Amino acid sequence: MEWIRTKLDKLREPFNQGKKYEKFAPAINAFDTLLFTPNHTTSKGAHVRDAVDLKRVMITVVLALIPVLLFSMWNIGYQYLSQIQAEVGFWEAFGHGALKLMPMVAVSYIVGLSIEFAFAIYRGHEINEGYLVTGLLIPMIMPIDIPLWMVAVSVVFAVLIGKEAFGGTGMNILNPALTARAFAFFAYPTFMSGNTVWVSNAAEVDGVSGETILGTLAAGEQVQYSTMDMFLGVIPGSASETSAALILLGALLLIFTKVGSWRIMLSSVIGASVMGLIFNALPSMGLEGNELTNFPWYEHLLVGGLAFGIVYMATDPVSGAQTTRGKWVYGFLIGFFSVMIRVFNPAYPEGVMLAILLMNVFAPTIDHYVIQGSIKRRNKRKSPEGINPQVNTAV
Image (cartoon, rainbow, N blue to C red):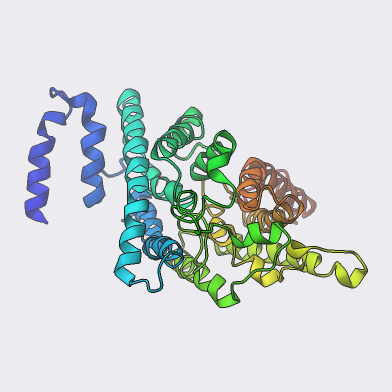
């Protein structure tokens, strides 16, 4: 590591303060801090002795995404090849999926990081690390056959309008990855919905079906997949959202490292389960249901982007609720509205996207009322020592 440190220091010399390329220092510093913990120290105020910075947090989320990403490469190939040939080899399926997905990942990172670097140099501040996760999430939640130029345009919109317009990482009010997907959904609807976009080459090869489970239910037909298929993720869907098993593994890593909020995850599952149970109870109340309302509540948790959205996007610490009670309310409503939207309006089967974006907008309001409620309760408790009850501490 000392050899690498020496080489990096030599490489940085022209970018140091007062040197020829000082203006471009944020770009070289980004590569430096990717390998080494920043060596600057605080000179006043609180001194935090912790090697965990924003970049390390983001890398932890990327690590939690890797198993899902690798599985999705195999599943992308399997969903296509299993419909055109009798036997499908592991590496054959994995290779097909990798050739489809990795260009999307490359475009997302190249376009997004270019914008991030340009803004950092223009504003004269260090590179924000938030795009390490966003750049991977965007292609993972897109249909596999979406044109690469549409991915690029969606990334530009997400970074410029959904993030930089608010001041960059830590200032955005909407999840950038979902902002990209929402833009693509409404700008290019024929490439983001229907029965031919969820399986590779389904629109080009006769006999290949791209119907998802939610699409089948919305059409009033019964699902042919087992609950175990849904849990493992051997089903059609967006590039990397199908495997609830590996998403659960990623959730455990995020919870163990305290990067993701278990309160938001658990309350989202509870909210989705409650809404699913309500729909399942309609026949017992004498109300006529359909395939979506009769779909078992626990299977609602396994299909579509619900699990992926709950674990990797609802827990976004920037756009989500910040207070402890607020996280419970925020998560519950995300799960509740996700199932409600997908059942009431089959045109939006991925209700989790709209539910999370909606709650992103209301997250500050939820926190506001949680804090005001705490202040009111504290003001009612008058101290016997005569301390002014109007003096409050933060929640």
